[in-house]
Length: 95
Image (tube, rainbow, N blue to C red; front, top):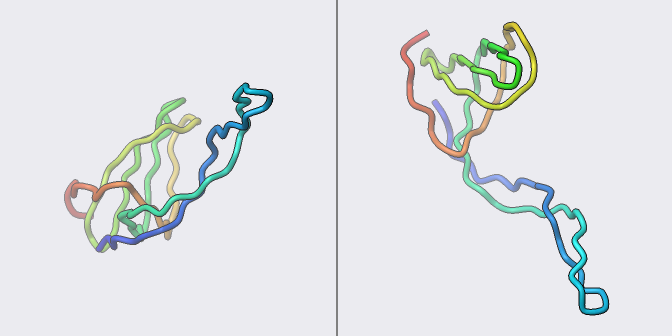
């Protein structure tokens, strides 16, 4: 079963410093507190399609599918994967 968790994540963004009346951008690291849906997958099948990947993960007998940007070709299996998402995934069946 997925669990809803509050986590602190860090990210890079642009900050600005005023120098002689001019805003100068510079990269800076910030953090924020967010709520995520986290899954503990027994196994995940990854299909690489050059710049995009599709994933099929099995958690507690329920199959979930999702996609995201990545790089590669072919397919592979990974095991015992913990992955968190912005939203709860829809079930794609049983596994």
